[in-house]
Every structure is written in C-alpha cells, then in structure tokens.
Image (cartoon, rainbow, N blue to C red; front, top):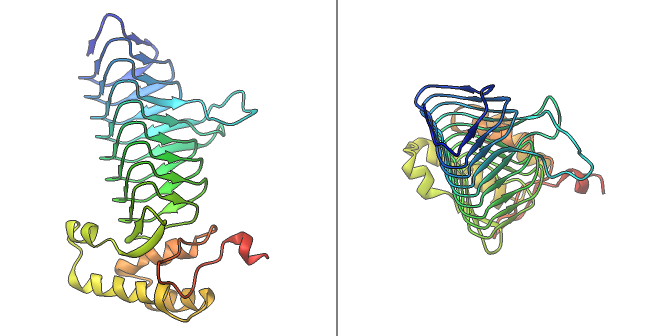
Length: 271
C-alpha cells in the first residue's frame, strides 16, 4: 500500500492490497476498498462507502458525500461501487438518504469531469456519463447506456439499457432501452444504431427492436394497447428488458419526434 505523507487514511478503514493514496486525499473510518484502487490528490471517500477493486478516483472526486436534502441532518445510508470504475475530476457520488438505502454504481463505468450522482441513484455497468451531467435523487441508468455532456435528469427518471442521450438534454420522463434521444429537443429520434452495432446485436434482434419501435412510437394504438401487444409478443429474448422497463414506468416515456402515442405518467393517468 502506497500512502502519501499528506494523505489521511483511517486505520479503521478496510483496504485491499496494492492501493495508492495521493497527496491530501481522505479516507474515513467506515470504508471498504478493494485491491489496486488509486486515489489521486484531494479525492475523498466518506464513511459508509464500499468499493471493489481497480477503481480510480481522480483529483477532487468525492464518494459517499452527505445527501443534498433539506432537513436531513444525518444519514447512515451507503454508496457502493463495483470494480474498475473511472471517477474523473470533481465528480460527486452521494450516499443514500435512508439508513438502509444504497446509492449504487456497478462496474467498468466512466464518469467524466463534474458528474453528479445524487442520493439513491442506481447506475449499471459499462455506462458512460459525460462532463457536467447532473442526476437528481433516485435516478436509474441501465447497463451500457451513454449520457452525453451537460444533461439534467429529473428525480426518479430511468434511462434504459443501451440508450444514448444527446448533450444538454433535460430528461423528465423515462427513456426506453436502445433509444436515441436528441439533446436539443429531448425527443426520441430512432434506435441507438451506433450502440447496437458496437455491442454486436444480431440482425434478427435488430429486426425485433425495429418492430417494437414502430409499435411504441408510430402506431395508432393507445398506451394500454401498446403494452398488451408488447407483453404478448416480445416478453423473451431481446424484448424482455424493454417489456420490463415499459411496464415499470411511472413518469411516462420520452416522446418521439414523430409520435402518435405517448405513455402517460402516473400524474396524467389520474387527471
């Protein structure tokens, strides 16, 4: 273990072999760190944080910070990271606001400069989040999604697997898996073809994704009818994750540029 003379590493923290701690970084008491992690200067890991091996916190990054909730004086919630995450300069990851809750980040993710992950967010694995993106509390981002720079994500919104969100989007509803969202208008403009190709989705599965897209965004069906059709026809294989995602939406889904039907939010359903 390599600890710079100005670093403050609690003797109560559980630390794996091969970790490196740079100048002025701080590791608090109730912390668990796996092997071969790197902590650059002024990075901070607060009590209640757990991370696996191979993670790298760059300058000024903070993991396990207190939730930004008015009136919440104390939280024993946790922040949990998997393996091989790159947490770039000045990122902030806040722990859960509830004592038995978790802010969770999977493995092999990259959070670029100034990304904020609020309390109780859930981020999968192989996710890329670009500079200055802001997540409110309870946001969920599934595996292999890409979020471009300066995106604002409203609390409780979800971004589905392998979706891509353009820069400066203001996300206030759920974005279904495999969709491409234009940042300027925050509208779905088709499937995320680049992500689909890079992840080697088969031609047969791409055909199914196109069918689901047409039903979801180009049909004359009501939302209830859309769910019925998709549940019956696509509840296995490549469509299974989409079916689960759509059935779980509470805020509704982001509209498409050419869209005949939109999933209503819970509020709209009750109006």
